[in-house]
Image (cartoon, rainbow, N blue to C red; front, side, top):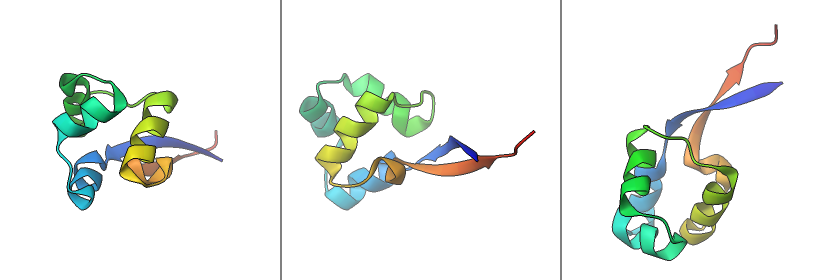
Amino acid sequence: MAFRAGKCLLRLRLSQAGMTQKQLAERVNLSPQMISHYVMGRKVMSLENAKSISAVLNCNIEDLYLWEHVRDR
């Protein structure tokens, strides 16, 4: 069974944490532009960045995206 990242839920997780994109960027040592790219769905987080972000937001990596099942061929 395979999955792919669907819609990014970072905007929701930031809101729940009461944190801005800029604050998150500073905490995980990424540019605010990169966080914006994630929020807008222009880029998919690397595993390392997703782990760092989920630790700061106190959630699981799985909570950062809606996950889509990829059909078996």
